[in-house]
Image (tube, rainbow, N blue to C red; front, top):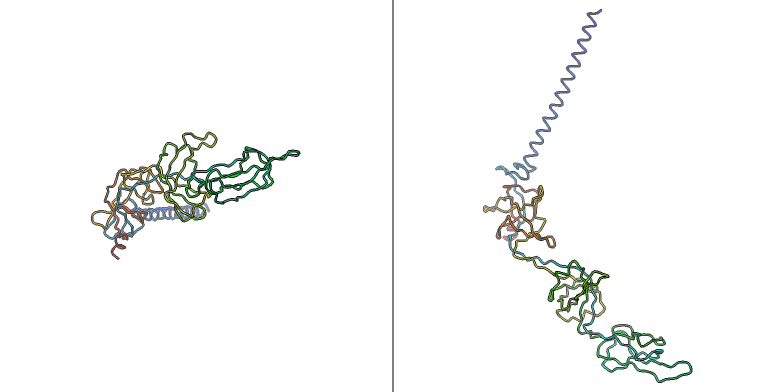
Length: 328
């Protein structure tokens, strides 16, 4: 009985050993498969490739790219703000005496000549009657603000209306304090109006306030339109794009062409054979509207890949779509 029990125990141990061997073999096989897959992956996702930073074999596939020739580009830094279209010259009109408005001879937008009648003020009071006091236009121009209403009580300090020259308009705008050091007379600006959102009206800075408003932390600038345009009206809301600093003398490339790796930036440059690329580490400068200055790493005249960089690697074969487009 004891001998039979020993045999059973030996058989059980043998089965356990066989099971352990099978499990270990399965684990080893799994690791082997993983290693093989990683090795293939490290050789690149493209047939015959060698990864993002490796070289390509003789059977490496060809990547279609778009290139540009590196050249110096001026980058124009700018400030965006809002402004109001107003007349270059305007005068506020006040009555010479207080009383009740009994007549108004003009309306908003009316054209007046110097000396034209604007209205009458009756200074009479209960028990005392006086002749009506006329109000005359001090200058020629257009009525820019709605005049006071007939029957309204006014004093000598009540604004009756405002007269201005609508043929000569300007824009007043507020610039945040952090940009004050960049302001200069003569700087150009693109003006966009709500009524004509697709039209750019050019203007130039003609006056800069000598002080910063302590309440708003802004400095007022005045811009004159470069050309008169009947579409522009006093009182319009203006969006102002004021060009401030010009960065010049360096190559500029769209930021989408840059490849980032370990806090370093690279561009792919077409080799002299026109069929392969090399990876060049570059130093970046100012960034304006998505374009970076390239301070070092490539030279003027180099053909730089700007589209299709994601699948490129050192020595990758390319087909330049830009050149193909030029030939067609």
